[in-house]
Length: 63
Image 1 (cartoon, rainbow, N blue to C red):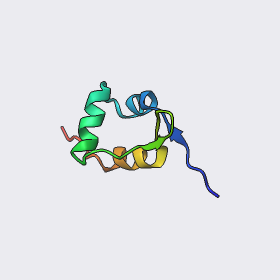
Image 2: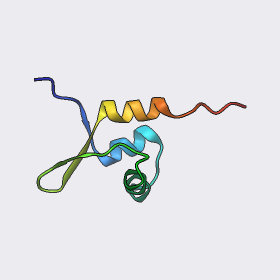
Image 3: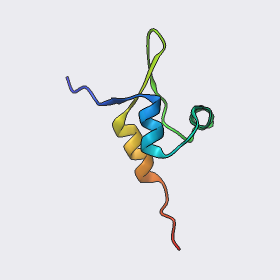
């Protein structure tokens, strides 16, 4: 079994530069951000690969 690396909300915020948990949840609800895995007891984690894929899918800003 291959177990993926799992990230906390704080780690996701650090990795993406998103400053607010509310922003993350709004983007999830609108379908613009990966859904987390819900472990019992209120533990929410994101697959690191899902977040990396999302970051890599963002357009580059050209100046």
